[in-house]
Image 1 (cartoon, rainbow, N blue to C red):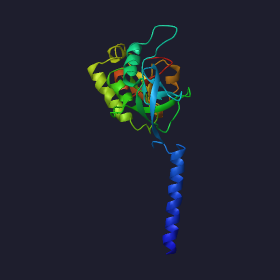
Image 2 (cartoon, rainbow, N blue to C red):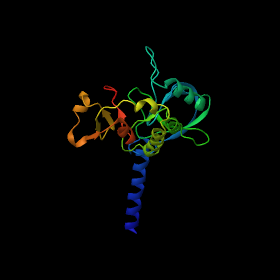
Image 3 (cartoon, helix red, strand yellow):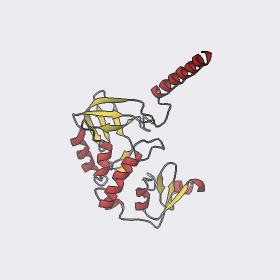
Image 4 (cartoon, one colour):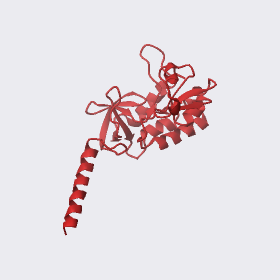
Length: 217
C-alpha cells in the first residue's frame, strides 16, 4: 500500500511539473496554446494584425519584403495581396510553437483558416514564400519543406528568379540552416563541424536552408 501511495505521489508531481512547463513554454516542440482571433489588418505577406492589436508573424516562412525607400522585392506585392485575400476580416486559429516571439517582438504562430488550411503552408505552396527554419522543434518544418520542394520543381512564384544566378558553392550552417556566399564573412566563421557545402542555391533551398541576410546569396 505504501508503494502505491509513493508511486501515486510521484505521478502527481510529474503531472504538475509537466503542466507548469507547458504553461510557460518550457518544453520545446509542444504547442503551448491555441486560440481563435479576428484578423483586422495585413502588413505584408507574412505579418498580420489581430483584433487585440498584436502583430502576428507567420511561423516558419519568409515572404518577399515590401521596401519603403526603394523597389519591393520580387513578388512582394503579390504575396501581400494573396495573404490579404486569405485572412483579412476573417476568423483564424493561431497555434504557437516553443519560440513565441521574433527579434522584433512579433508573436510567431501557425495560422489556420476555418476550413483547416494552413496559411503559412499555402503561401509556400504558391511560391510566394520560402521556408525559414526556427530550430529542431519546429513541428511543421517537414510539411513546409515539402510544399517548397514542389514549388521549386514547378518553378512557381519566387523560384522563377531565386534559382537563376548561382555561385559555384555556398557555405551552410547546419544548426541555423542559413547559407552564405563563399566570401561572406559570416560564412567564413562557421566551424568545420557545423559546415555543409552546397553546389548551388537550389541544393541549399531543397534542404530547407535560408539565405544569409548580409551577403544575400
